[in-house]
Image (cartoon, rainbow, N blue to C red; front, side, top):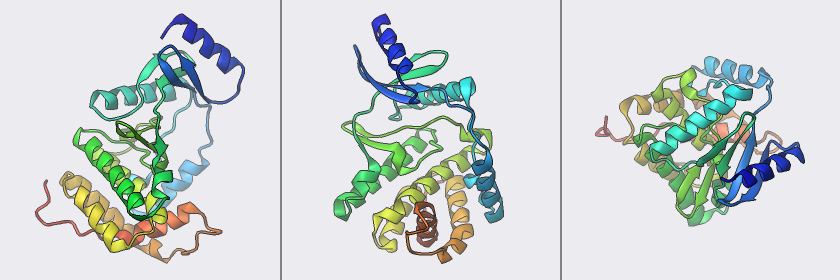
Length: 260
């Protein structure tokens, strides 16, 4: 990036209070992301209480650092994942108060899944492929909700790496967290028979490490009680609808000969 690009970005930021902005530069379209301000911990505490109550470690809240520490975490995570060959935004420049990343042109996976039918189901499976590939490369996503997946010309890419799950859990739990987050965020909009969904999820989980499969299955058993949540999406919202759908997809038909 040129000095002119950086001057343009600084002027753009001075003209807006938005935390994230898109700008056109000499290297193409970029995303400029300011540091996150300090956030309330009440939601994290509520999530931790739920995770402990259900005995599901991967569901515990991951520390969301603000300021310079949060920015440094995201930069490190992005560079590590990209170095492993995982599709994430390229960090182009780091300033004291913001970072600049290459813009990922594409469509949110949520929008594609919501189209339904065979196309929606195949898009959902592509998300599973992306998670399995990231794990095979030794990575983990932490925020693997479908809203953070983008279908690009080069394949499925992921965004949002402002925290590091390994601060509070093992790698197996962090990778299990990816599976649970993705299923929770998609099953309620997928509208496919649970048997079909179970088979697809089990197919990709079968090649995970035994420790990851065990954590996912154990979490599924603990989440079974959530099957009794209200089935109506309104007024309960997507979190409740997603939790109920997630509970219904377990147990997964994992083959006994799965790779360890």
